[in-house]
Image 1: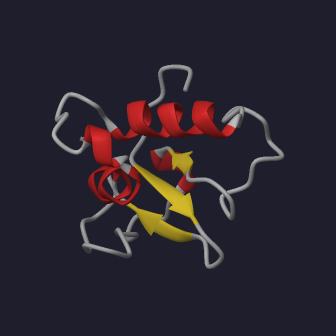
Image 2: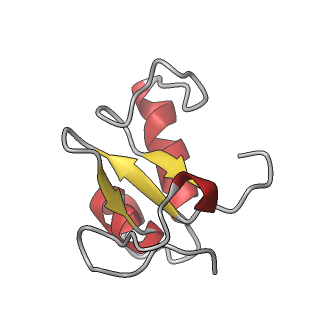
Amino acid sequence: MSGRTIVGYRYGRDEALYCSSCIRDLFVPYELVGQAAWTAEDILDHIAADLGLDRQDERVSSYHFPQPLQRADLMSHESCDLCGQRLTAA
């Protein structure tokens, strides 16, 4: 992601916003459930590779696969649609 801090993800038909923890929990494959060292990005890269998706390809939309968001992509008040955590850089 070119060194920019990911503060959340946009995903799905309604382009819902998710924090890294929730997107990780939603997408973690069964065999990686106990692997705390795997970040949301690690898991999404793993799944994308299994599906043959290039996450950098602009044709892969947030409708089909989670898209990372940086702070500049968000309004100041936005939060995770699943847990309610405010989406800001750590």
